[in-house]
Amino acid sequence: MSARREAGLGRDLVAAHLEHARDRTLGLLDGFDERDLRRQVSPLMSPLVWDLAHIGHYEELWLLRNLAGAPPTDPHYDDVYDAFKHPRRERPDLRILDPRGARAYLATVRARVLDGLASADLESGDALLHAGFVYGMVVQHEHQHDETMLATIQLMERPVPEAPAFDAALLAPRAPAASPPAADYADHADDEIGLPGGAFVMGTDAEPWAYDNERPAHETEVAPFRIDRTPVTNARYAAFVGDGGYDDARLWTDAGWKWRMEADLAHPQFWRREAGTGAVDSWTVLRFGHRLELAAVADEPVQHVCWYEADAYARWAGKRLPTETEWEYAASWTPGGGKRRYPWGDADPDESLANLGQLRLGPDACGARPGGASAFGVEQMVGDVWEWTASDFDGYPGFRSFPYREYSEVFFPDPARPGSAGYKVLRGGSWATHPSAMRNTFRNWDYPIRRQIFSGFRCARDA
Image (cartoon, rainbow, N blue to C red; front, side):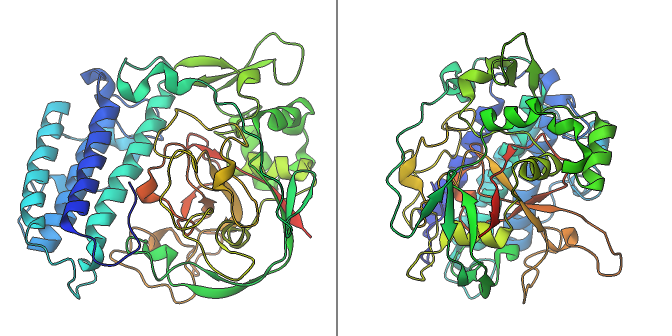
């Protein structure tokens, strides 16, 4: 289920999005006991029950208090569920709701929201209400926290409870499909595709649920470049590891090498060296408590690598990371000068086009969904793994913060403090990203040291 481009999203569709997001949230936590919901598995992540109640507080804040002027359910929640007041490492010590209380709070807020939706004017000139924007913001927020909770569950590093969301069949590797023949305009060499570059429109003014950092649409120039047809695979990354890539300081930026040494990085997160005879069969990878032979997922995109690791691999391969401008051009532009909502066109994602929304509990093999290729023939640009880009996160020309600074603007570099922020842009979503929170213009960002997210990358180089 994804947000429609057309203005005038009906109440029934908005209600369906809200219900679908809530079913997903509760399904993810089905089977976890109170201890698992309350404990903190990593200082990088919140307790699951904090995320659960935070989802309800955000919904109350925007759909009841901002829209209807309702009083707060409990002023204390404005403190403990404010992500900017308390970093994740502090949240286990806060006076937060227990699992039963959090679920009850979510149910109460949702009932009141649906009552208000019945009379909401989605054609209002109010920017919050028009085309259901504020409802879409809340829906996407919940799905984004669901992905965060999946990352937390992965960090538990033990088998998850038996529940539909974690069915063992969802861990099974998916075989690649044959790739389609290259289009006439695609110059293939070394599994790369040459793109002509030129002027194109980056960002959007048309998406009803687009965030402020995706706006405004603006014309920019791209020089000709080459980009990998698919993300870098486990097998290709294992070759980098086996060739001593983690021990060669020449491949790393100064900051990256410093972090590699401090964190003692030697391989992607969740990999473990086993007895083997080669680069791939020497390793296993942990996925939701299950050890998989890396050789069985050798053709899948590597995930759980940080920006520094991706950048070092690209140097080892004689390439670089694409800029986010190059990434969006390759994903959204057409040789005829049109812009697509998704790489394959404007049709909503389905299983034949992209691995989104937990179709599996991991990436697909590269080449598994050739029908989802972009107009230039670049594959798997949406779904599977978030892709690190070379770009720092900042606002587009003409950026206007809406509806609150804390979604995007506070993460931009501060001109008064050179070197501040330091967030890198990721594009394309992962297998854990819901379709309603994904489009070619969607921008994610994180620190270059982060590995717990479902992140991978592809390489590029100058033409």
